[in-house]
Image 1: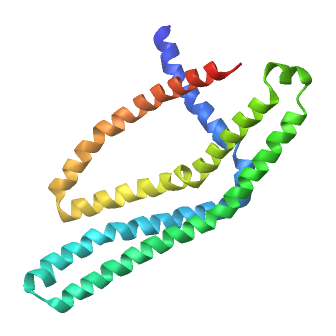
Image 2: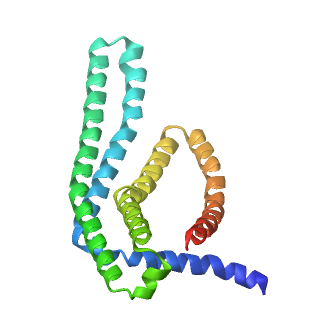
Image 3: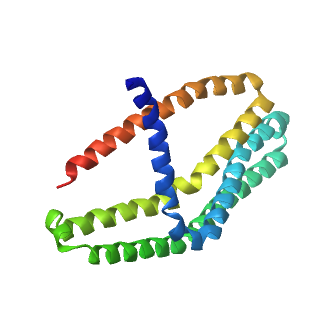
Length: 210
């Protein structure tokens, strides 16, 4: 019986997390195009960053080994161009989502304040309004940060790891296998550490409730 309950808890936790994310959709839907565009731009910038070691490899194996000064300057200019393009794309990504996500947070704050005003007086007796507003606005700021960085870079990191692994296998298959072997323990420990963190964070949150 205990084993069955233990197996059901992770599944229930995942369903709860999905439902929580879906509750953000009405606020995110007006800016979905900007978020998707920002993720695509970040993917392009990350792939440009992966091209930098390939250019360095070409420089070392080619112009540097052959003593070709013009080739070294060409490689340096190419590195500078790729670095500037990567930084520029990340800057455009930030400007693309800054104002829309500020509007998302503003709409969530408006809905939060509207909900507080509709609560009965008994609810305010159990939890003072000042503390409730402080806790709520802090949580909304955390959601803003989540939408701006982790949600955007989750697909970016996945694509970057896949492309980097393919490039590493193509350049030196032994190093690629070493990378894959080191990634397997992380993939196994990730869900375990995530479940422990979820339990610890919920215990901390429950202790702060008055």
